[in-house]
Image (spheres, rainbow, N blue to C red):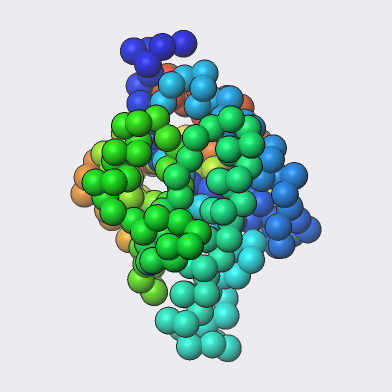
Length: 239
């Protein structure tokens, strides 16, 4: 496959922290990092895409769930630090699988990663490195979904691919209601109005303003992402 055949050439992949967890999506499962990283590297090598990744931290700490016990801003910063831990594990796994990487943090932690500088990030992408963005936006009260939308727009990505534990965007939680409806196509405005929680309203609004499509798919179909890159849809297309 050549780049010329791809519909999307610069891609942001959003990975939630729960994908790397052990029992019930909590803790750190290094085998999951290895498995997902090997799949990402295979797709990256096969297609020649320019790839950036935003990783969540919910397997370690989810700030919004702890805001009643801890100051809300402090809880969010703790959640951002959790994404850095996942980013370090992902970077190590990707490089072990043969992919050159750079990790950037939204606030400075120079001993483990570069601070995010937009022009430098774009230069890394142009040099063929997989860039991992961590620490969200660097500000409390914003989710990593908002961080993903922001970084995708800043680095001129063609699409956001969001990997989840379900097959796409549903009308309700399909694990609680087996009759929940799976949307194949939905607009940003519909997603906001229906309060569909696959991404937060800020992320949807950013993508809507900049006409950036989002494809939500099951992580178990990661090996088939090359089909999405060619424009063959599975999961949910938000546009």
